[in-house]
Image (cartoon, rainbow, N blue to C red; front, side, top):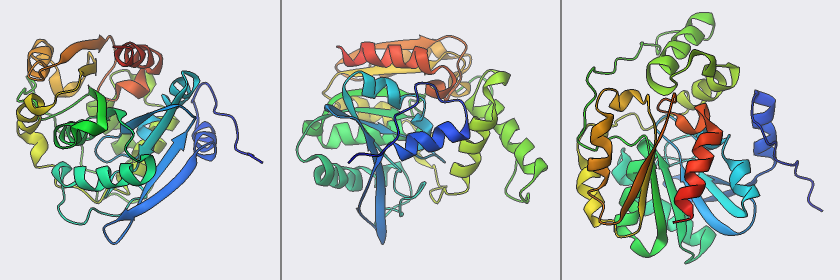
Length: 287
């Protein structure tokens, strides 16, 4: 008998987050010296969502219900070195992850091609998988991706927090960094955003991030043969002041289908304006 709770339609609180996790099926596959943890929901054609740096499956918590309601089987890993997953067998950056992820998808999904959606750091991983394992990826959707050879007008500087003990000062630093990097609107920085951000930071064992400062994604896109779509927050700090350069960069993909810009949203667009992101994703998946 299935006793999992029903997915809540709107995710506003930490208790809602717990309900989403309780509604999932948890999977573990070998990875490095441990396992890679996946969560899945729903039935139907598989879609795989890859989270950003210092993240976990919770980066997508507000998007799962819409995909399940649309008849999709939603699969989200904690990427190797993040969340509950062990580090990859070798390497310490995005380029170390395509092999372990392809092995995990083969174990969990067989040969089924998937729609692959990547956010930020996960966008690089997703593009590498699409280039290296073309039969695996039906469509590629990128959001908030770095490494496109485009630099913001002003450099991003985050507030130091590693020296702070748990408490109000640490929470204040996390709130400041959510505002500087992840979310554009002050009212988006709520208790749920803070809880997700803080929990994910504490479990990040992949701090190198060297290739995100290169143009590796721009150089990878010509090797991607499936349809490619982009969904970005218009206020994404990684591209503030140079948003007009995004579509030309993404068009390095031979089958680039278009870029949706979501007004008023920042880097973590799928959390900040989940309804608009879900509509844009549905449109991308229909083409």
